[in-house]
Length: 195
Image (cartoon, helix red, strand yellow):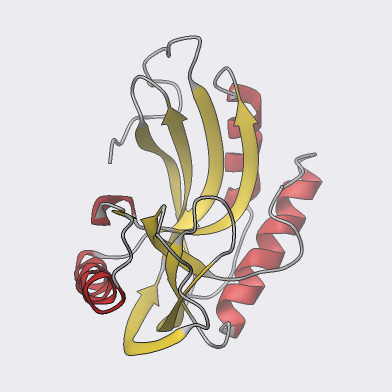
């Protein structure tokens, strides 16, 4: 994970895709438990897919789209929106694993029930972005998840119970994902949750 400032990121090759999104990043202990759970799932259910590196684990809150050049104005407006939020910290319990039925068949860790704190953060962030003139592309259906495998041989369906992982959530971040020659995540900003 690279930690560059908003204005200090290196210029990219023209073929790169720049993706902006708000996310939750797990602390080190939570990340280790996620990685161990993902490894057990791959062993028990033979995913046949590509494991995601634990350093890339995140839960997307609001997706702000892709661009061929770094969207500096959009990133600045997103940071301004995030700075207005005053939502409480909360606990997120990951207690099931499943998959989506799309081309890359991603397997994920998620929760049976979305905690109120996560719902509130998602909604407040969406409103704050709209006030800055930004349209999130996350849709209205929330399936909170952390992708742990891509390109699985088959879906993990129906979802299966996992040993619960309790994730204390005390901040959220804005990530610039650069896909191409660099293929890196850069945290552009982080904001604490109150209380």
